[in-house]
Length: 118
Image (cartoon, rainbow, N blue to C red; front, side, top):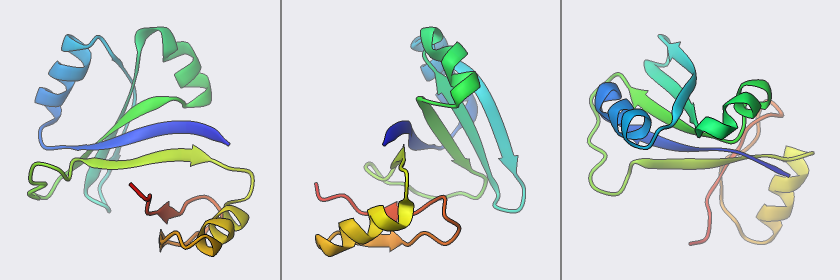
């Protein structure tokens, strides 16, 4: 298993980049605008991680900006932790057997959403 990224929802791209890049010194590695899904993904890396982040695309911070207004309240900005596993179907089956909720089972062999027990 390999850690890929942490996703955080943001309300304002400019304000968020001012905090993460200007304030913390992170660097934007790539950006994806998805018109169909109406969102923008911005991937950031720490300065020393930029070379590895651009070749391996990990580990990074993923900022997700949804184009449509949504109230995240004070605690809904956190989105997910992403991990790469050898067999997503076997991993989900193992977790489900332990009583873990699979919010979105794998459909394409690449992604599933699993609820943590915290």
